Amino acid sequence: MNLIDRTIEPIAKSLARQYPVLTITGPRQSGKTTLCKKIFSDKPYVNLEFPDTRQFAIDDPRSFLAQFPDGAVLDEIQRAPDLVSYIQPLVDENQREGQFILTGSQQFEISNTINQSLAGRTALIKLLPFCLEEIQSGFSLPGIDRLLYQGFYPRIWDKDLEPNQALGNYFETYVERDLRQLTTIKNLNLFQRFIKLCAGRVGQLLNMNSLANDTGISHTTARSWLSILEASYIIFFLQPYHVNISKRLVKSPKLYFYDIGLASYLLNIQNETQITRDPLYGHLFENMVVAEALKYRFNQGRHSNLYFYRDSKGNEVDLLLVNGPDIFPVEIKAGMTITRDYFKGLKHFTALFKDKMPDGSGLVYAGNESQRREDISIAPFYNLAQIFSERD
Image 1: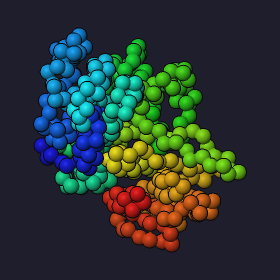
Image 2: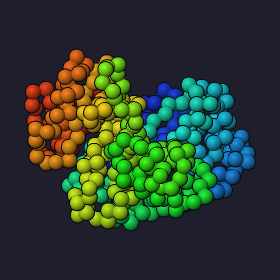
Image 3: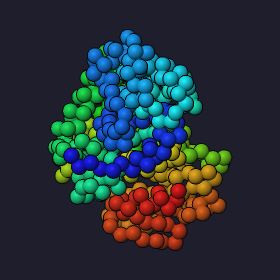
């Protein structure tokens, strides 16, 4: 295995020195276990996926925790959520930082449990699959089409797995096991159809009625299923930027997948040569860029500061990085040749918000050259992190 240094490591170590509990959430197979075993190797490691271990933790939590007087790494804590209530008095009594490291692959369940029992006692960070910089540090970097097809799950890279098969197994495991932990869905085939229809809407405004009708379910069920996909780190939403200006702005969020390879798999793309011919190619590229921006924030231990802009006349900017009063708009284009049309949305946005844009604006595209045109920083996809770091 090619053991990559994860960008989030310094933040995780630092927070474990400040809080008695560190909670790490993220998609299944994003590398949480590997990260914990590497940077907290001095702690006992406990996997709550094992039935006998989990049963012990559920039946007799005090005796279970008594095995670890100096704390432990407790993997997949959502499998025994009541443990958290018993961890609270232990850390309050010992008053030591970095006692317990908790991981989980369900964000809302974990957050609710944590918020109720460990408020003020835990730091919470999110580990997503590899970011572009991490891949560049340990592997030969493929072309964009390959990245869109393969995605960023560490195991596919480490084991050099065939993406279509590996992502198919990932999806089946998710539906057969993880989903059953979250909710009771009677018609799994219908749910699978729903997820595939979501993949057909990457980078687009969420239309709940259309999604429900195309699946053959109610609006209420569609909303519930979206919440499940969000809770289990399959999809996320980018919210529109709202300000008090006269033009009417859209209210609907845009839908994205945390991993672009999984979205490609769900679109039935079976090899990388099919990527460029797919009618959603531009949306897939946009999804990949937005997900990279999100990884950059999370790897710094920060919350998302990402939005998009769109008004009722179709004027749009794909991504806004919002830091306090300052905005850095970024247009995302899947073409390799820069054309005048690429700047249309940015120019419209600049005319409205120039006083909020001290750093100008940005354009990310699939070409190879970095350029500067007036106040616009133009960067190839592979130099994405530079755009983010310069605006931090």
